[in-house]
Image 1 (spheres, rainbow, N blue to C red):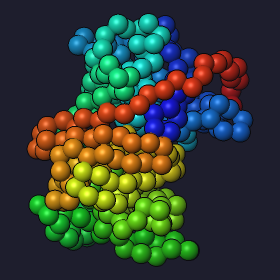
Image 2: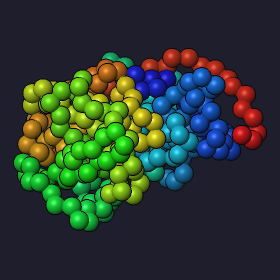
Image 3: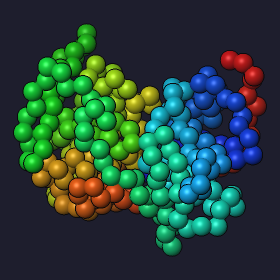
Length: 284
């Protein structure tokens, strides 16, 4: 499946877990030797009363992560199309909390992604020794990026959408050093769980262009939680209104946030590309 070009292998494990390892997830995600995907999404039975399903996410590097917004839309489309539910709105447990995808009449899916988290310890972000730069009603943090080929200090807004994000405002996403800076930000020592690196170009108060270097996956065509984080950051920085069209390389997402403790709402496409089977070795 794919949502705005962010592509997924979706596994139905409602009748029992397959017992896959990190190596299995890496093989499934491998575009040469496996199926090929940015993330592997797993549908599991409800773990507790009050939710309909559990949603597990593994990045292309095999690591389990807390959240994936584009995947959440595909998850909702999958369980409905597979006859696993007849509901238009479902409650889904993720490692990052409970989300509520809703299938719209126009075929798009809206996901209540929950409220953004700004407390540094909860992101988590270690600001030891760093001095923030005031921006709007908020602040941006300096990150020193150094490797053999690159040295720079960038200022990022940090927050969590159930997973950690560092959002940088750039003049032009087409020329932004996403591939050079993305891995350095992802692995920066200030982020103990690593981080998704967003590069946001503000076109006007209702429109941004966005590229995201995703933790454990590299740059993807779109990142749903990254779009939510970018818009929430832009609103707090005083740059954006409460509803924003986010243009990614893979398509457009609509993001709305009323501020404070209100949830971020993300609307976009969710498309099934093909169904298939693959035989995986017991041990890799």
